[in-house]
Image 1 (cartoon, rainbow, N blue to C red):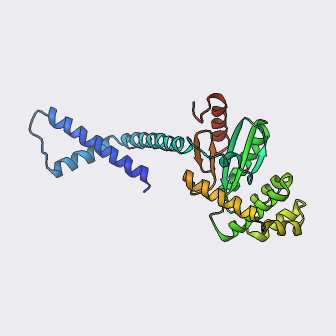
Image 2 (cartoon, one colour):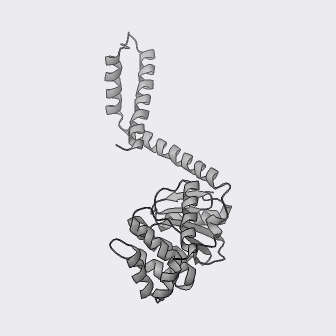
Amino acid sequence: MSRLPVLAVAGALVAAVAGYAVYAQNADGPVGTDRESLGRFVREYIVNNPEILVEAQKELQRRQTEKDAAAAREKLADKPDTLENSQHQAVLGNPKGDVTLVEFFDYNCGYCRRALGDVNALIEKDPNLRVVLKEFPILSRGSAEAAQVSAAVNLIAPDKYKDFHDKLLSSSGQVDGAAAMRAAGEVGIDAAALQDAVKRPEPKAAIEEVYELASQFGVESTPVFIVGDAIVPGAVGEAALKAKIDAVRKCGKASC
């Protein structure tokens, strides 16, 4: 059982106990206050009012969402310039866009592959959106190899980065350095030049920088999006991301 349902049950129990206290206070005759009497009343109360479980879970979810949003705002209150303006990062969409969407991703992440279509749709439909990609290889050694190649592609052929990124992230099966090199070749990047670029210090520095940012903002999975004052984990879909982008554009925050 997940944390929220457990807390929802706890909330329902609190409501039932409170109901028992009211019941005992208003009863015409004596009411048992022993554990057995209380337990019987609580059970009957929940069975007869099962909707309180749903209500409690919704309220707990609302509170958790508010708590997470507040924590994100606190973390992003003093964000470093490297989050949106690093010399190492890949930028898609409009480089001078009025709203920046940052994505932490891993080439072996299934949810990142699902989110690829959402991000591309947002770029296609929103000419003022700026998307910053952060290679965050956390799933395997192959992911680390692919990220190194990816950072090297951005270093020597930034104009071909998006084609490379789309091809590699939409591929099936496990991705590693060899798969990344093949994808680069398929979009016309010179293999020898790319091999040399992989060995340069910049790709390693790019990934180390992303790890530092992830640690600062509590990013532990992929994909994770950052837009305005919100940290958005998971492949939440085009509509959810668009709503936050529109809000940032409207009021400067991810939720107006």
